[in-house]
Amino acid sequence: MHTVNTVEALRTLINTWKAAGNSIAFVPTMGNLHAGHCQLVKAAKEKADKVVVSIFVNPTQFGAGEDFDSYPRTEAQDHEKLRAINTDLVFQPSVSEMYSPDAKTVVSVTGLSELYCGAYRVGHFDGVATVVCKLFNMVQPNVALFGLKDFQQLAVIRTMVKDLNMPVDIIGIETVREASGLAMSSRNSYLNQAEQQLAPLLYQSLCAVREAILAGNDNYAAIEQYSCLP
Ligand code: PAF
Image (tube, rainbow, N blue to C red; front, side, top):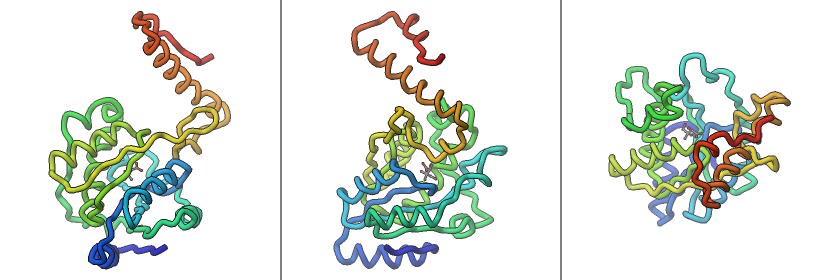
């Protein structure tokens, strides 16, 4: 497994692979990898000849007061996991490699980024769209894989790729869950014991709502009251 920290080294290696006729699959991450990320890499291996994974905790997608400084950084363990599943290349740039201090361009998927999660995390999806756009320009992959867990993020990226005619196929991969049903996430480590027991009940409540609707129940006022919470 190769590891590179600069755009120049990344491009040199990828150009060599492309010149030899290899296709490239790309999995962008912020590290602290879990089974969900590994699932993306394994799926990527089936889509292309070479798999590139980026590890970059992107400051522009964290709002003021969010957890950029304390976001878990687990480089050694991440590399071990990626090596075990035959990742070809890890791109791990510094903040200064990714962003020049005088950068002025922001990618904004308006009308979508302000909704739902975006209403509470102002600027978050602009940070995501901008860094993913930059990473796509650096890696120039044929396909890129994202978890369906971050559904709004996936919608923002799909829209950006369509609107800007980016030549990359975006593939969404099913959420990997703990035995309790809780979606795997790097931020689950923030939950205390009581919260760890409570969190899966949100998913169980959503599943109960889905089952009711699929069974033909259209009493939505009653369904809105469904809750597995104590
Ligand atoms: O989903 C993530 O981990 C991040 O938002 C991404 C796509 C790597 C961009 O920083």
